[in-house]
Length: 214
Image 1 (cartoon, rainbow, N blue to C red):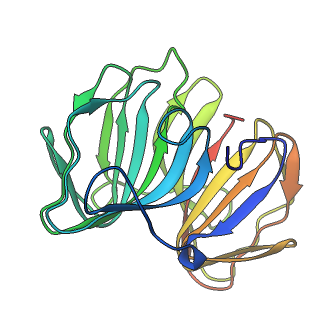
Image 2: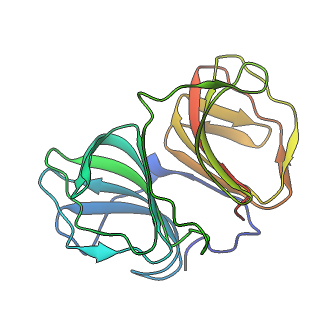
């Protein structure tokens, strides 16, 4: 098990981790959280080298993907950097990448009642007004769980707040900051239920945020 105590705050700069081989040739990964070696709850950065592919497989309790670089593909289409995907339980595919790609992947983390399949190219989706200067792009909502991209213009300060149901952040670009530290692009932060902080940025920053699921 790796980082499976959800009562503890976890901060990992994925740029500092070494790539490890996966069971598929040409597919590498950096493990952020994992329940078992090759099954169960997992959060990882995954890299497909050019031409790499996985055999056809299902996703018990779902698969959630944000394409960070390159183009990710399967039988349903080609998904460029900036695409957000949710594949629910019952979905089967044989993913591959012709040119190579890098992904943020979360496995076995859907609520049992969540069967929605989602594919959003965030490059073409609209930003909505958020609190203060923030801009928000909603990606998924189910029960108390909510996932969105949030754009922080340089110099934005957010009010201190508490996370009911916890919060996960992946810093896509820029640098996210709070009283506990500074988090450059590639950093994954998981904060437990009822944790709190007072975040801000000094430069334009985009983060993926999931709340209400811990």
